[in-house]
Amino acid sequence: MTSEANNIPNIVVVGGGAGGLELVTKLGRKLGKKGKANITLVDSTHTHIWKPLLHEVAAGTLDSHEDEIEYLAQAMCSGFRFRLGKMDGLDRENKQISVAPTYNDNSEEIIPRRSFDYDYLIVAVGSVSHDFGIKGVSEHCLFLDTISQAETFQTQLLEAYLRAHTQDKPLDEGQLDIAIVGAGATGVELSAQLHEVSHLLTAYGLDEVQPTDVKISIIEAAERLLPGLP
Ligand SMILES: Cc1cc2nc3c(=O)[nH]c(=O)nc-3n(C[C@H](O)[C@H](O)[C@H](O)COP(=O)(O)OP(=O)(O)OC[C@H]3O[C@@H](n4cnc5c(N)ncnc54)[C@H](O)[C@@H]3O)c2cc1C
Image (cartoon, rainbow, N blue to C red; front, side, top):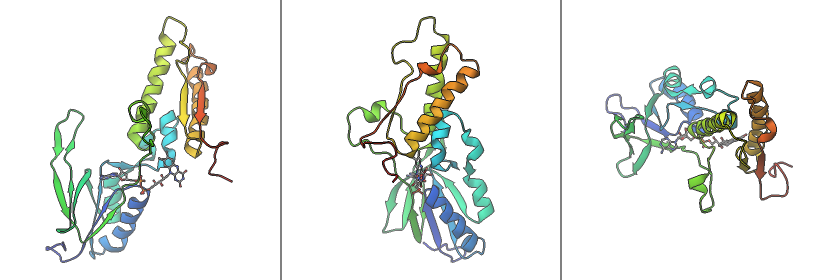
């Protein structure tokens, strides 16, 4: 619905990823700042990170906080508004989206369920890795689609290292094995970063673990690494 207060259109963009963030920034500068439209970005997280960096966050060679863009700060500079929350409903007849409540780590509700009217709606929520319905994958594998997944991997890697460094018995067979599914750019770069990290952690003092204790495997259906490249 056109904003009744100032009779200008409401443009709502859901998803502040590579596509959505650039779009709201351009729309905000071109229309929002000139009062020609209300531009609103809705995202389920506070910050944007360029996804091709996620393997570095996972390996621990990049502090994600150094490379993130705060949506609120970007909004303030670029003439759009940011609203935190996960879109979970669309009413096309009434031109309205609904956004689920947001909870903190203690499961306390911080932001109640909300809805936003739009004249123009752009849904730019990206994609997630496909497990091809293979049994056990979603329960037992880690994925690398979001910052929190990358940070989870990083935490588990460090914990595995600390456990191995301090245990009073030899390492079990395969205790520090890492299997990466997919030999595209992310899988190959992740394996290279992990190889480097295995040397760094030993150098930094976790020296009960040797780089040779960490076996990194890449599993790929194609006949070679980086099958997408010529
Ligand atoms: C590990 C990794 C490495 C990659 N490397 C490369 C590369 O080297 N080169 C390359 O060209 N591409 C690469 N890609 C692909 C590239 O990142 C994507 O093509 C690109 O990010 C897609 O942009 P997008 O705006 O469509 O979605 P995304 O960038 O995925 O953004 C989607 C946004 O929507 C938000 N969102 C999702 N659901 C909701 C919801 N219901 N409500 C509100 N917000 C929501 C998310 O929080 C996110 O901010 C890589 C991807 C990954 C995961």
